[in-house]
Length: 468
Ligand code: PLP
View 1 (tube, rainbow, N blue to C red):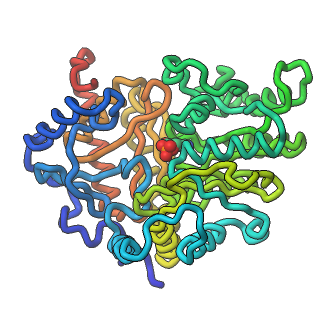
View 2: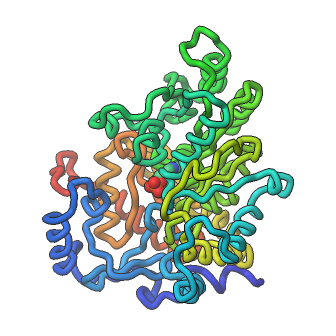
View 3: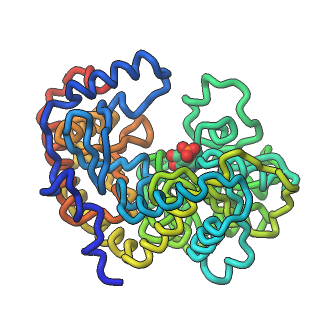
């Protein structure tokens, strides 16, 4: 099939024919305000995104969303990195429409649709791994797949402890929280899963050992190696080491290759299964099918979800080495393991990715983004401390949470939806659709630059009202 140019997310947008945001009211507009107020009255205090991005969304198309007041914004949040081909990709919509009339829910019965999807999914792995890989479709969230992966490794090894990393995020269920770095969310919840040991992640911009990058000898890996090999380090041999190669919620922190290589080497040497959480990085987000492809490592277990259906249909899977498959029938059941709409969309999504060479677009847009953000960093060195970009997983680390929150607010007011993450939410994150067009990317980057410029003009004591 031809070049990606004819099939980008934004070529066919009716919402934003000129490829720029259309702001008809101030944000939030009057209709959004009504729904936001009703939501506040009736939904839980745990709601999160609309607090900082206050709109009620009516519809989406490609890289754009329209709110209830007719304002059209560029969406670089895309359902927390879910909408791989943007909102309402016409081919995926058609596939889902066709499937909904045939079969929607299939538990874990085999279906032709699931079989087709499984083939497409396995095709993303290097050929030599396919036959020896088992796929477990679990409950349709990343957290459920993490739970499944932990249970699998505990059962297969007969061990009980898990090694996880500072800054990691793996979901909000009890075990997933227990292996996530953010202790503040865990603080209010007594008795999460015991037996988790946290080790430093090679976050070189904020070195866990307080070292400058040029004096580092991948100490994070040395520390882990020593602890795993030292019989007096207080930990029995763990059931698994659980790693994000690029920490997403942790602030787009890209592990250095040497760190990953050594974690893989020591886990292999000691026969400890390595679980790589590819919930956010998988299916092309980083410019390769899996983040592990950048590093040339083969995990024992991969966890995937988010973009897996390409269209926001919930689905999650654990892909693992068959030697770990000691599970008894029903070892990890769940009612919603058989979403046929997700399987049908997922198979079509992966075919579109290959047909339209979307990974090429991811790499080209990543270069475009990197170049612009690095030049912006040169202009605003005191505000922008680091720019990190691997494929379309993009993070800009600001000098603190205030600047990051204000940039998010100023970008939103100009029609660009961005995410925050990292320590104290000091990182502004972008997760555009993988098929985002060059033009839309350029528009978004100029809005981002304007937002940074506007924050620079704000008095330092700018009231915190808008940041809440
Ligand atoms: N793992 C990673 C790396 C994630 O980024 C997330 C969610 O952001 C999860 C797991 C949890 O996924 P879910 O929110 O679908 O439970």
